[in-house]
Amino acid sequence: MAKAAPPSGTHGHDDSELAEFGYRPELKRTLGNFHTFAAGISYISILTGTFQLFYFGYGSGGPAYWWSWPMVFVGQFAVALCFAELAARHPVAGSVYNWSKRLGNPHLGWLAGWMMLVASIVSIAAVALAYQLTLPQISSAFQFVGDGTGTYDVATNAVVLAAVLILFTTLVNAFGVKLMARINTAGVFIELVASVVLIVMLAVHITRGPQVVLETNGTGAGHGAGYLGAFLVASLASAYVMYGFDTAASLGEESLNPSRNAPRAILRAIIASFVLGGLVLLLALMSVSSLKGDKLSTDGLQYVVLDVLGPTAGKGMLWCVLIAVTVCALAVHTAAIRLAFAMARDNNLPASSVLARVSPRFRTPVVPAVVIGVLALAILVVNIRQPQIFTVVTSIGIIMIYLAYLGVTAPMLVARLRGRWTPAGEGRFSLGRWGLAVNMVAVVWGAGMTLNLIWPRPAVYNASAPSHWYLRWGAVLFVAVIAGGGFAYYWFVQRHRTGVLAEHRLEVAPETSEPTPASD
Image (cartoon, rainbow, N blue to C red):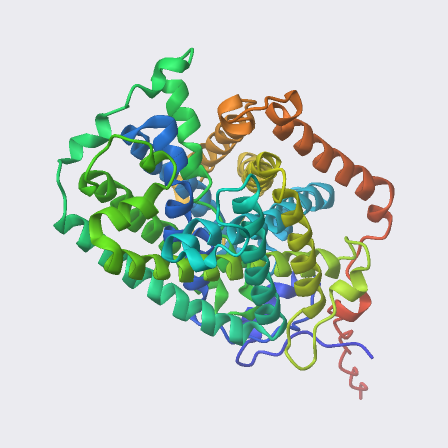
């Protein structure tokens, strides 16, 4: 039985956006403005990223690494502006995949979606490992494997804690978007309040001025390009944090008025993350008792918080960090599910009909939630005895996300130059005459940072002995294998099957013409 076009009822306009892609509405629209904002900001996760990677940035570039935060923000804000314009025009699930497909072609769309999907699964595992950086600092009781001094104690314990978190995110996502949104919203509220409280508490204890961000700690000595080389390495700590804002748009099919709310959510998420995260990093450098010693480049912000706030208030703040890590993992898992659903709906993944099935009870794709959770758990196994390899895999995940973003901004730029880009209608977000300039910045930034991320530096990909060529060149090799192997599979197998599955296709009933009245 053919299904008619969406009615002009409560969600008629929202659902009409899907009609352009040939999809019928299936997911339940329950998410409001703050829910979509929370999804974007929890993926970026101020506390998760800054606490997880401060040690790397500080150890690589000293206090002056702070300047990488505004640098990355400027580049990623240009990308976010392009995404906001796309979200106003096409607020659909699997945003990056569908945008790339629409702006470029189905082949480019598949590659961008594939890179983003693999990267998202890796990111779930990487975020979940952040439990190890925080829980044992709260109490040694959370070091379940050994006492932390054994060769593999920390790495194995990290996998145990991460596995618990991934099981949690899998169950929550399987039970529907409403439960996920409630937990995510509560977690983001706590994270935002905790960030503001942390900023105030650090500000009260400052011991030096903001000129601290001009100190390099001599980190440029080992680089041929001097401090520039050290800074480019240290900037990865910020580049690893400020992405994922597209999640607000990827939930477009479950949001109310997404063409208006999603662009706002994307921009608010990245701006709030920049302001709060930048202040946390700056005030941490200004308030820590000493900039000497190894603790800052090994224990990072966890050490700063305990040092400045003391054990009681410090551990209270670390519990807030733990909540932030939890909702971050939840948001990454949620975004990966929507992407897998979007690709499967187009019959672009193995077992697509199963992966694209929407639970009639929970109105959400349950099978992708479980499959992605299992794959993320499987990736964790690598970390048990080879944490250096896991670091390489994690870095590859970030590189693939930046490449997937380029798969959107580059064809968008081409469309603008050819006069084929049509922004959303009046009253919705549009870059107007600034669109071309912003889009060019987004593409140049994306290409430059991708090169910086993938550059085979020992400091990033083989930081400690033993040295192996395959670790140093791991990013180049693995990205080539994942992109090349994945696209070969698509080209020779999957592209011959591609097309919206019948059960997800919007079929417009043919219009019946009025009978012509008989002439007298």
